[in-house]
Length: 156
Image (cartoon, rainbow, N blue to C red; front, side):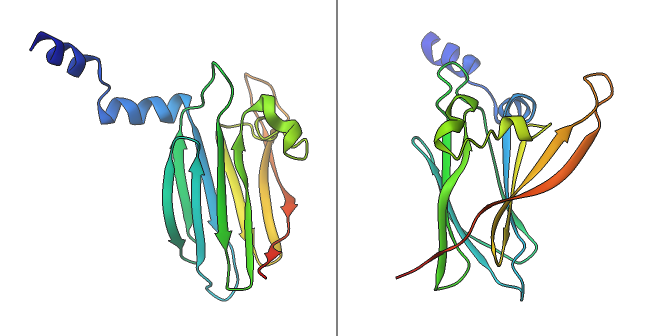
């Protein structure tokens, strides 16, 4: 009985976990900016988590939060998505800073001034919204730019 009480006391509550992930974790947004009110199909996973399939309405977004495995720096999330029956994309949406060489030398953490990753899904492909800090740690000043990341692949 004492073991159960101790285990329950050491287990973080949902509110505490939400606060921890908000302050120390990362937030990934996949924003549907497809034309003609097209729905976007998205299915994201990591080695440990399957976030399940989602249909994202036009002008809406699929969002998930997580805490990076900072000791081993091995956190990796990837998503498969489709805008119609002819086009799809499957790519990594988050990787640790130590692993940017395998992703076109694209350093996610160096391109965002916040702990938020934003992928914009458009008719011509996938874009990354970069937020660079041109200020300093006392007075941050973010400049936002959109970087083309990849085209859609054609289904066979």
